[in-house]
Image (cartoon, rainbow, N blue to C red; front, side, top):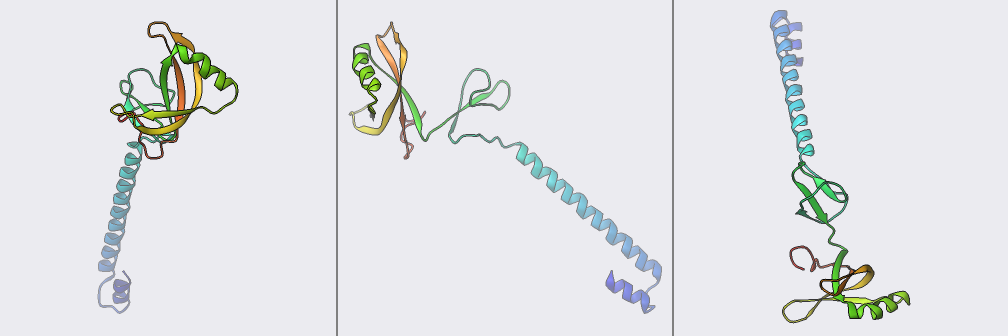
Length: 161
């Protein structure tokens, strides 16, 4: 436009040609702004398509309602996010072991829990006992316990525990 303005001042081109070029430049500037608006709208739609979790973990599927660490992707597709570090493991022991475990917990001692592999009993990870369930399963004669493992190497988890 500066070049056309200079040519009009020098009388080389008529004012009408300058005005036409000015209108074309303004029109193309408007097209650029409209294109940028479409780009911004596409970026916004991308942000709406990402679901973020308030906790780190691994996503799995679960039947049931939404809430309590469940993100509803769609009303019929609730998902569960399993925290992996640290990871909480629930396991059972025979009810005959309850008095010994309970007395150690009440004494304030930290009870070490070991996760062993299924094939040869090799220790996979070590953790600490958090709590003991208040019920004994009458059908199996066991009680449930909850332990926490640091799981720094992601050894334990929904797909490999």
